[in-house]
Image 1: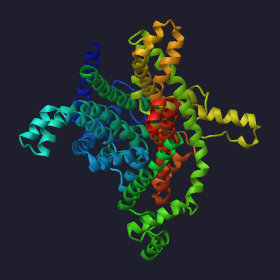
Image 2: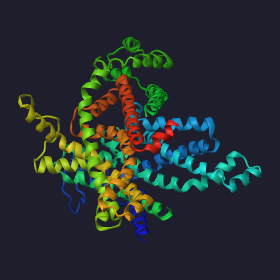
Image 3: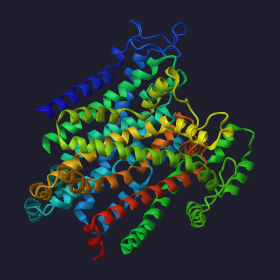
Image 4: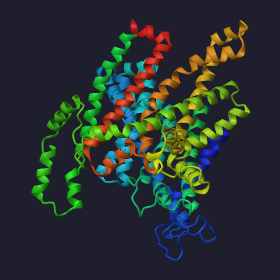
Length: 264
Length: 326
């Protein structure tokens, strides 16, 4: 019962943020990049619920538009990672032998990388952009999924229904795609949901270092860059974007843990 | 045991080769050479001058030649000169390592010393009041971005309360301090960075410890130990804990890349001259030699961490030792 509650809270949080992201244009009270010289560093008030930054831009509007960036980067990056992970993991698990050995060595190598160093290097060299960030986070985050699905498939492939479909002459590709992957997908989904939280955190860290989403496009991470120079003067620039990140990540973690407890 | 260690050490070599190849290809295939950046900053640099520079750094050679040259130098622990100030990359890294290592080792100690007791306490009475409260905080700290926590704590302790220094490693008049005051001054500057860099992993690892301990307490030998009338504390701390703490060693080893990655963030927030900040500077100036050296060094540290974890695992658990000796 308690787990369902966790799941419910998570779903409510994430769907709220998803709606905010979808209808950002309708909800946000101001244009997120509108510079208002007369209203610099305004405290949270009835006019500006979350205050304004040092250029007079409305923090609430910037956070609302930032939701778009953060959620889409999180979802697409994890989509890429899951796709690669499922593909390589199922090939490794199904074929075994040398192919398995090679793929799993690649997993070992990738796991030894200080991933954040690699991402920083690539993003800086390629010029930071939303698409580069999605791709590079995806390319460095597939190893867990690959291991999970390989382990599942190793235990599944000796079962009778797989042997039966092999006996009826189904091709390897067909067996993998229609029998093995769907039966092994449970843990992968949980992993992916928790992965979205991780990807959003990564994006915000990159943006905070100035190597993520580039201004004037607002992202939760790059709103916080400005808060560094106004520390001690304008607490609202620090507190609200961080809360948005925190609550979103909590939401995804709640969903992941909720499902995990429910099926496991 | 020594057989096992040698086997594991040999296993590192192909991994290391793979890592160097992948990072070399990724860094060099990207469009954008350090000489290009120099040119865009200073348009007066002529095309000829750029070619001369590229030749000097060997950037005009085919990639596989560049790689084999790099590898030959790497075998002698020569990572080449930094492309920004021509100093040997290794020197630049070595002078920055102590700071980062001090912070990371202190955070690991802190993580271990806090997470393990928390996990045990939660596991003894799962779903109890203590467990519920820690679960709440674990979720919270696990979800909070490190740099955000750093900013909030900085705001509270450094600016509002003024208890801790805002940034840097030492006070201005550090060199005139007595040795003891120097140590105190360093510790004072490192308090917040260490706390911030450990908080996320601390939450995660206490969770692992909890589930590992719950698992261990369910084992048949625990029932035996209880049945024969051993004191509660002996059963918990001698029989269960020994088994439960094993996986934690591995996880601590695996958390090295995250700690290193985190050091980029908090070193730049707190203005600490460690290897994280050095890497950030290298990335911003496209200093290929320095980037390459740090990525490889990070990977080596990670592999060593895993190795130490596995060896201590084998050392504590005879089952693993015997299996590997056969």
